[in-house]
Image (cartoon, rainbow, N blue to C red; front, side, top):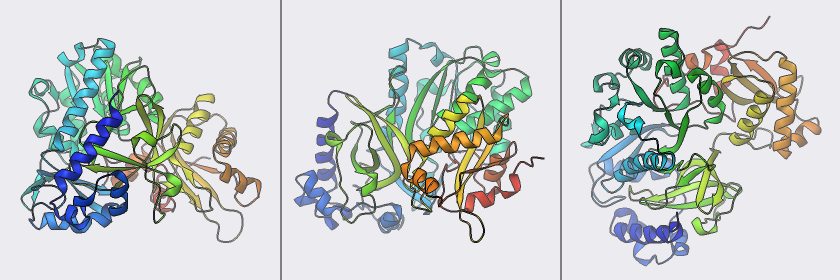
Length: 478
């Protein structure tokens, strides 16, 4: 915490030095880079598409392309815009993924004194650990890769069995996980919140008990991948009592941050783990020469696109997430959204953080519980005005749907001045709510082959693709 800026400067120098003789280092004049300013001049911001030619070189068997030698793994991930992505993981970068998860648990133990959970059964709801080979490089889901590196001292307590973890079909796998864990002394449960909720639902269905009663020693839930808040109320109700939670910010490209304290807001940025971070104010994204800050220059409350440079061989790489610092001493942040997940069909530029904050505020005030939601623009071609359509799966429908709708619209207008201007100027109609029937989002994800694992429903789209996909899952209200 105390050495964050100095550590970042040291990592920057080490990364440049180590990659000077790679194809990427030669292409971008690494031998002449002495400062961050030099680096900005020579290395543009790239997304996966722009990186692809280098990845293809590695896949063809070439060495020393992005990092010295060859990757020890490819993390295979389905991008929303790039199709399947192959993210390199190197011998130097694998400790970032393994040690950060360990550090999150050790920080929790140190702060709370709760070490007993490590003696019980632990489950990490993850993708299959079975790996294929591409260019003789083991390739698979990040969660499956990491499964091979679970420390020996946790391995004997880990659930489910390896065989069950290898089942590809999520619902078959889930039933088997329930069967294997229902009578165990589960003490820690980890996964992406919507899939943890599905696990809880199956357990309650089978046992007739709340999770906290079924697993009396269950004391820690570890989660990440999506904003926890929209799922928290329902998860806690399923448990039936309050438990500690640890939030993580992992991705195939690196493990960026983790919640180091139950008392403080946000997650501690992982500043000494082989990654040099850059931060671009969101409004600068897309410009030819955007402002690129590094850690010492960030400010609290500003939305930044997160850019990484790492010992996995990623350079000026935009991971697609936006973050916002809630503290700079130490450097703690929250994930505020996705660069490509926003609505600006009418110039309003509404982001994920705004819609999540609005719906949480109103749900809390009106005692309404949500399962899942997404928002899409509806562009009117003829009669009537355009509007935002909120497709929401409620645990229980609001007693007064119209009041809920108006309050939700008012809340979003307060958070986004452009949206408010469009409503005030009579250009947009107030938002409309389309209730989705129970299990509708799960049905939709299943229909597109993205049920389970690391897949999640985008909160926002700038088109109607998800809204149209949910067409057959609407709640019919008489």
